[in-house]
Image (tube, rainbow, N blue to C red; front, top):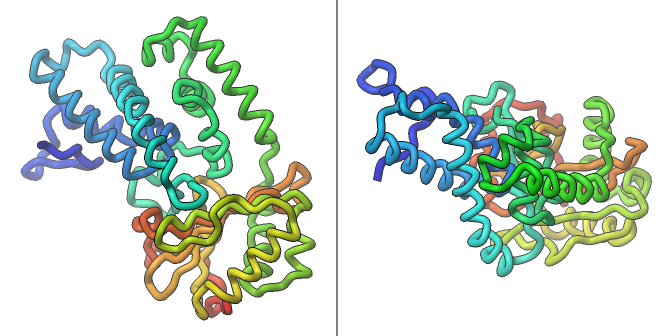
Length: 322
């Protein structure tokens, strides 16, 4: 089985063949669309492999210049492969240990992997998108994130423009009801993130009570490797008990802290030695002064691509967590 080419593929020092170049030129777009539909890098890579096989299979039967719009063809094939995979992904999540969170995309100062440059919505919005139907999510991602017209989406998913508009309307209402349109300014988000991390890892109950909203929700995804909680914890008092207990009893004695951008937002990445230990992403209230949601990913399978040697701002001397 041929492997899906990575961006920058070269053959014998020369540019890859035209079919491969076309796929490589669109791979970043395809990754962004599929990742936002599935929330998993591994599943996205598998779908891109299937898309590559469909693409090369098509060109074995017909010449490249017979494909009117390679971009449209590749997006259509990728979206439909992603829709087919959703059923398997959903079955897998039904037996998942604890809360499931999307796999975070952790950016470096100068990301080398085009996947980290791909258009990606925030981790908080990806959580909301999980409650949409597969078709609603596909339409939302294509229209709201990538700017496809309803008529274009109709051709991609094999529905009428009227049906697509209805799907888009339902998806947009659902998302907006669960996630305010407010987006905190980067400096405000960064300051809130730093305040929260310092209080949480330091076990400072008073500071946590001040920074957390009364109805805050803490989502913890440890998988089978580092289970933290089996379900989201709601309410400030419960959240404080969870966070301070986790810092004092479960976290390693010494963690190195880096501030990175995760899915486009400021976030904290914790390392135990050279290995990633946790990614922590905060969402703010519409007023921007308190934390409304905390997303903590500690599942090692979701952090395998995170590297400590990727430069990012570090907390002075690391941080004590116990």
